[in-house]
Image (cartoon, rainbow, N blue to C red):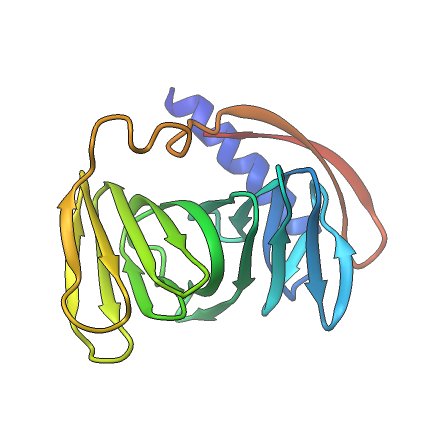
Amino acid sequence: MKKKILIITLMFIFAISLIAQESVGIALKVKGDVILTHKEENLKAKDGSELENNDVLESKEESFAVVKFIDGSSVIKLFPNSILTISAEKTNGKLNKRSTMKLGELWAKVTKNTGEFIVDTPTTVVSVKGTKFVLFVDENGFTDLFTLDGVVNMKNKKDNKEADVGKGQKAHSTGENEIILSVIEEGEMEGYDVPLTEILNINLKNDAGEKRSIKIELE
């Protein structure tokens, strides 16, 4: 198993060496209609699309995108009808990730001790140190957090009230007043905590125009 993990890691590092220095992430898997907005230009996202700071992903009906940050620490899945702005900055040798979820549903798996991982919603700030969680943001900006592993901190933007949401717990926030905590009910996360294990074939091109086709196993 250790040998398998090492090979997968080396393959991802090799893939990263091929992409532009400005990139902060890569789309490992895209299905359906997902729009990538880069510097006010709307593009169709595809497997292998490079993501730079402040790029926006918008998934349409029956569409999704799986993204991995370039440090290999975190992977996210954007579900249908969702809008996410990708942001990251390297500080002291670590990639600090602070993205903005405007609307929709997001699954994330974050490795510990690999820089900040923060998701802003219209009403809350969600901070992660190493965990697996699902985030829902509705049309009003109200936010629901489901922690599947580890601990996630949720903080209101209006009154700064906050709560730590542990494994098996969910939290609801309107951005002010108390954050409501409760237990995730059986079957409630069905279809959201899906193992993302598959072999992905990705075509990459670096700044020099060199092309490579690689395989990455996403677990």
